[in-house]
Image 1 (cartoon, one colour):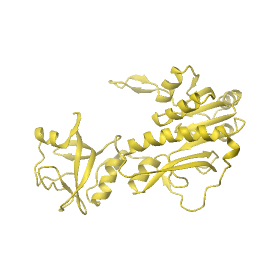
Image 2 (spheres, rainbow, N blue to C red; image 1 turned 180 degrees about the vertical axis):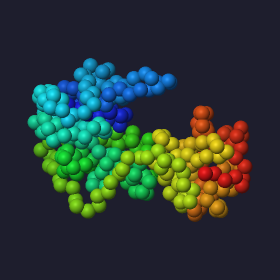
Image 3 (cartoon, one colour; image 1 turned 90 degrees about the vertical axis):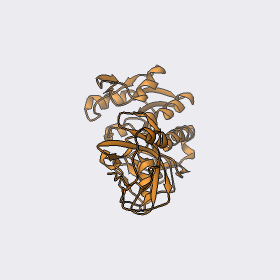
Image 4 (tube, rainbow, N blue to C red; image 1 turned 90 degrees about the horizontal axis):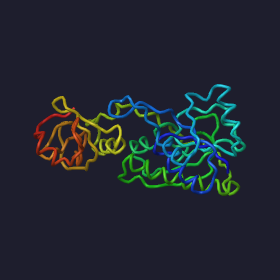
Length: 302
């Protein structure tokens, strides 16, 4: 097929790779414009999708909006059979949805209709879901409400958001190739009315650990925000990111440090960080960090 690919972050790269290597013609790629980055925050940094497309010699477009008539005519003029969308980052007007012969197909990182919206992986972990997955869906005007073409599940277990993002990215790439290989074999199925939930965008304030919650919930916070933005607490005006943790025995006032291994009391139960990152320092195992920066038993974390 002749395809327009629309995506921006690392999550979208495996789908672009899979489509190109399956022999489809990627007519052009739409992605978010380069953003300020680098050490000083001044260098314009291309998106991961832009980098991959340019390495493959694919034309890259990064309009700030798709609402204008000129952009919509330019999109239609590509003459694509279909558009494949994966975490693009812009709302697609109806003229774009109708701008190819077969419309737009989206790779969504949840088991629709559960977790429609911007942060399905993090919300699934925070909610304590036992499984998640990837859904290939036909796009329509509603937010992730279109009919489903293919769906696959995977257990969440103790995976972090980073783990699941990588797993579902490659799963989505494999599934989109499977769907496009034989569209007739994947009839559209309307999403069920029940069970729909909304995965709102992550607010950085949510990454502050709430030790008043049960230890199981705090541990889910840590996994949901790993590696970014990173769950954190403060001690003596220094921020500590917690990258991983394990459940521990004990209890006490929420936020109190129970021993010299940084076991922390929660609303019920306790947990022990196993890998942390002190502000301005590299990540390290908790034991190594504590040898140089002890947090004594009896301390209160906030």
